[in-house]
Image 1: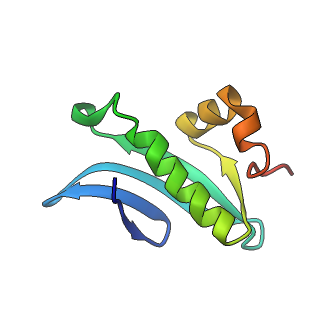
Image 2: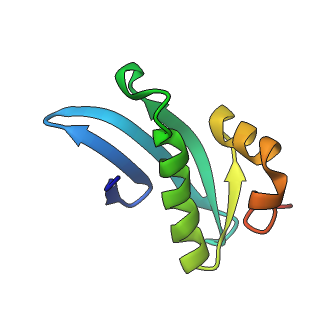
Length: 93
């Protein structure tokens, strides 16, 4: 799926309605993305959209040699369920 991107946010929009988004900020002196929220409209749930949004942020972080701090519940759960997949990108203070 092709998401729109602006600094700190990947999202899917239909006209004026945001259907899905992941919001992140830069912390740790510009070395880490803190993923603060992931939202998917109920009409799109169960289609893997949240995982695709997370993958988009992870790809950006890898490109920029950054880590990711899981703040939102979805990302915390994803990191906990698949530690091998996320161990290299996860921020470890």
